[in-house]
Image (cartoon, rainbow, N blue to C red):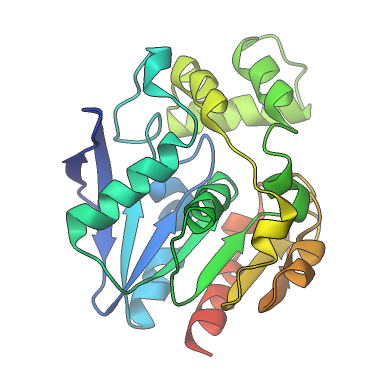
Length: 249
């Protein structure tokens, strides 16, 4: 896919991709990943959504993929990813859409909803309750990985994250700075989201807390357990199948 670009209000250049025609669907990737890796490389989740009748819009978050990766801490104020996604929606002139995100993408989408965004349907994938209410719960884990590259024991969880960083061509400096921008959400806020929200998560994925507890906390939450852990669930066809099922039910 060939990226298109727009400029965020602070001058950062951000990339996005489009696939398919039909109802707009904003699809936001996870941390250290990018649009292609998260949604197309291992299994064509985006293609499956496009075939189901959606205009799939996939941004590369700042510090990821084909988007700018500033090394200036001033480029990463709190909630900047949310601001970027609002800017993309404005850039595309979208007023009625569905939205989904995986891991950091789910947190970004949740922050959008906390600030008033109301998609017709939303999907929070690779996310549990604690991952939203405690946004800094794994900050130390990722900082230790990104600042100690090449020193992690082979086969350790840290080593696998570093290997994924190499695969995605990630910028460790920018990704470390981005951690400062993460914001949490009070549980009372998400309990007020009275519209359909799907929670899709690997049965062995507890990186972001309890996914079933998140679905149960949402007034119209629907829980979709799929095979895999946090890293492997995006490589399973069940991810796309669950997303299509929820968005078209």
